[in-house]
Image (cartoon, rainbow, N blue to C red; front, side, top):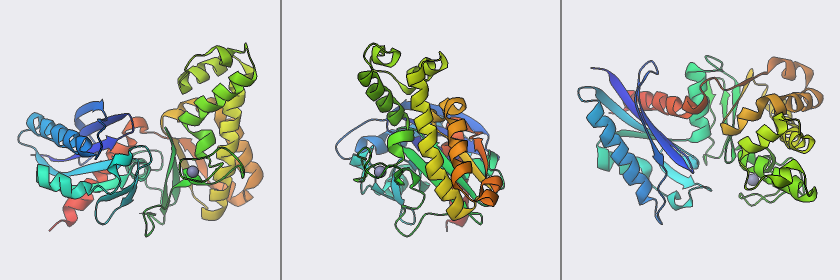
Length: 317
Ligand SMILES: [Zn+2]
């Protein structure tokens, strides 16, 4: 009998669940669209249903915990979702209580970027490194910060919200209530918005001709050599570099790991990002920080959640 954690990566669009063993081996996977309802009950129901499905597939295994990585700030100790800008119906949801009630298992809830940072430190690009910064570029920009081997959550669960570091004082309005946050220039959403803006300013251009583009469409256009599309990725790298230079000066990390769907444009934005980091941070700190792409890709959050699930089950009475 193997010990298993059922780890869920809850996204604004899709949710994925995997059954993960102690060495990070994945035994079973399931994926569906994130259901929306007024009160978040549909999301709980889907997690419970996927959990029951996993159970049926894994008869005889020892299911020790359910872990949920959510795009939200978290009251980690109580397993409650504080604020989720992209899934606001979950605000205030006592996720751990719901899971314990319906599945009768130990539950652990974590911010999705923190979970990704924990996964990368367990089995990925920052394996065994005690001081690191994880940056996730998706619908928004998330972060997870390790200092001396501990993930930093802060008393209100907002530590690591690096996507809301301001990089343009009077810049684009952000969902958090501020303006000019790096999320508005470096997320997949921002890549699409900047491409549409540049397209509208340049009638007849390749970007103008894209109808309802995704960030991958903008990437393909840039790869074909279109100067305006290349400018989108220059801006993405420029603003990320400004944000990271500040963090590198403040935290002196050994590693910076960049993941999430919009990290796919790495070869186009990374040179600009690295130039800003070099120009704006202390020389020793910039040399210390090894900047790499995520090694676990889409599985970082699931594996980090699983790791937390095993830790939580070990501590449970
Ligand atoms: Zn913001």
